[in-house]
Amino acid sequence: MDETAVPFDVPSWLRDLGLSAYAEAFAEHAIEADVLPSLTAHDLRDIGVTKVGDRRRLLTAIAALGPSADAAPSAILESAAEPPGTPPLAGAERRQLTILVCDIVGSTELTTELDPEEMRDLIARFQRYCADAIRKFGGYVGPFLGDGMIAYFGFPRTLENDAESALRAGLAIVRRLRDATDLARPLDVRVGVASGTVVVGRLDDPGSPAEQTVIGDTPALASRLQTLASPGSVVCGSITRQLAGDLFRFEPWGRIAVKGFAEPIIVFEVLSESDIETRFAATRVATIGRMVGRALERDLILERWAMAERGEGQAVLITGIPGIGKSRLVRSIIDHIEVQGHRRVSLQCSPLFTESPLYPIVRQLESAAGVSHADPPALRMARLESFLVAAG
Image (cartoon, rainbow, N blue to C red; front, side, top):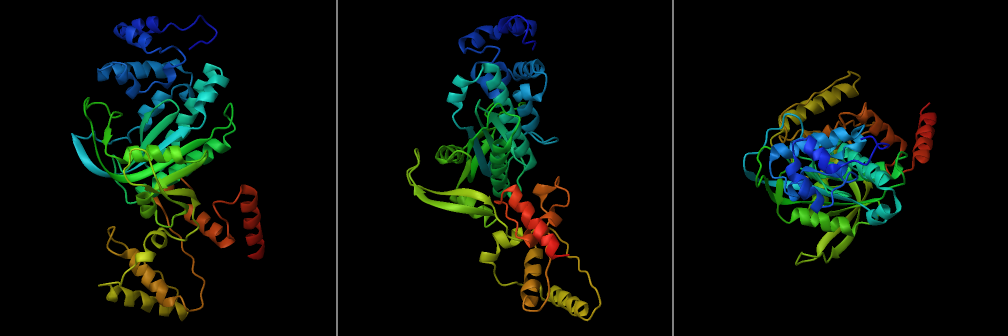
């Protein structure tokens, strides 16, 4: 859009697209040039654009108005909403979902203080940062609602760490917006995360991937938790807390009466990622049971350990499908040799950090140096330097 030219005429733009039938609806809902870039497929359906093809044409044309992705948040939504190659759902299905709701703090005040174009740019960058974090941690980006957004973890793909992914995404969004240097002004957001059973699918328009409907009380709970959060913080419910284990540092708020829910809700604030060594230790050790049926494998590994103690270097590779007890077997070996004098180094990969080079090595160094996720950058660097000096 050429901002130095004559004012942008929405009815003429619609006529050029062959969609002048919607000019009256656009006028009725006060959709002017400054609003166009923040429109989503959900918004278009609400104002009466019922045909999937027309919504697609409008979103494509809206994206073309901006000089970059920053000026085309709807395009970000369309590209981020569904991972490549994900087949559309047929009908609806029951799912365990973790839902994240994020909202800009003080957006009404910002609207009155900023020029409309500055506000458009601010919201576009907010949407981009949110979409980037959601995608990074494997989530599905739902509708952007102006100064707010919703994301689903556990849909359309279910992973064992959906609650962890959602909380990491929430903390990443808060950090990214707090530290951003390319915004007209700093942005604070509130994030609410809730987990539970829902029914997810399409009520209509089965050809539109961005229009899944989630039915259940989990979205409402996530939204209510978001309103409880302080600016720049992440709040979650008890199920999410339980699923995440000790992978994060939580501050319990106790039971809080929440509008729309008959019983008070147990609420936790998510302070930061924890410094616990492995995901197994964070989520399972507290309830670990007796190992069954792995005596042969355990004895074989302990035999290799004895050979290593005699100076014969050994390496053991344990492979198998998820859930057969590999981590439990390793834990048993560690417990057996814990009392002996040695230095144990644990490196664990994570599907959430496939784009972070040498992530297990970095985490090991941080753990050895006593570096915490909550430490400011200067303190992290100082502790790492002290550790390296002491290590020679």
